[in-house]
Length: 294
Image (cartoon, rainbow, N blue to C red; front, side, top):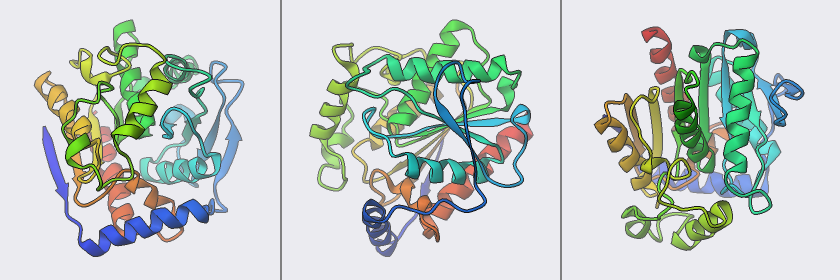
């Protein structure tokens, strides 16, 4: 397992917190050169949107599937469009932003089923699995890791790589950082318990695929996990990376020192902070390595 600590200063942390508060009151502006196209009817019945930055490849040459966060319960289409645009630039591919069903109206496994169906729809359109990347944040990171387990169990060809930012991998809420980082993060145990209850609606928290950590983790594609050191879910990412590595997998864990949950949202700013630029650069560089290794 390759673990990298991304150093920051107190000024970086303060700037990130200020930017996150600003984004709550002043939505980011989608760049004028973004191309937006509804995904239906070619995504297996799953709604979504193609978001493409200029000069990206055709769909047949490669796709990034983006899975938004929001505790399995919320979505913010405007913010998600900007995030998808940033990912399109970083990955060099058009991005399919999946509009999966939300809890509590549609609890587990509805969102996971939508994620899997959207992925399979790309295979049906002759997009090679080797040219598909999964990328998600928070609950979206959880969903993409769960989807990998479902696809592997079913014998589907797996994507080339996956990037999970701040995923929750153990819905038993057993990670030590949940309590150790209490008070340093926007999220706490009570929030995670609410998320778990709404999403699972009675399903077992110690079972895979809903809790990816409890699955058979051998044979997964290369993974990049990114997490802030102040996140209550720090150990969800760390324990999952350790388990994948123990199963013989290729996994990189980036820990952004001093950063809370949702620090990745700083990439939404029109003038991204240095920490956001580093995050996007590391994602792009890591994906480029995966491309070159094939």
